[in-house]
Amino acid sequence: MRPAERIVRGSEFRKAFRQGIRLDGRLFVMVAAVNGRAYSRLGLAASRKVGGAVARNRAKRVLRESFRQLKTLAGFDLVLIPKPEILRCTQAEVQREYQDRLRRLAARGGARRARPSPPDAH
Image 1: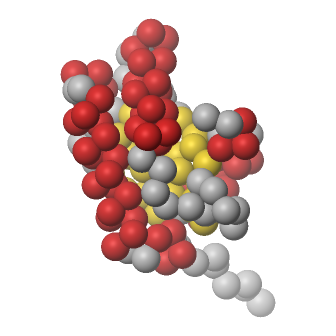
Image 2: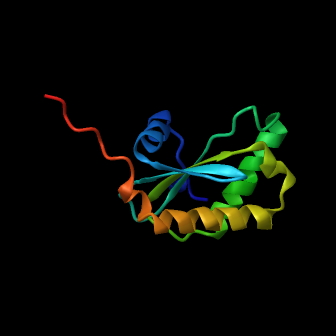
C-alpha cells in the first residue's frame, strides 16, 4: 500500500467520522467519506476491545490485505474499525464482508449521500 493511500492524521480521521456514512457489520465497521481524489485511502482504528497489541495488529493486517486486494471504489476515505470477532475468521471471510460493505456503499450512492453539513445558523 502506497503512503498516499493511508489515512494517518487525526484531522483526516475526524473528517471521515464527521462527514462519512457508517456501515456496520459482524466483523468490522466501515466509515466512508468522499475524499475528492482519484483513489481511495484507508485508515484503521483498532481499540483495545479487540485485544492486545498482537491481536490488534493482526486485525489491521487482515483488513489492510482486503483493501489491497479488493480496490474497487475510487475517491473514498475508508476508516475500518475491527471488532473482536475478526480474530476468529479467515481472510476469505473478512474479504467477503469487505466486499459486502463496498456493495452496500455503492447501493447507497456512495458517501455522496452522507450526512449533509449542517446549514449555517443565522
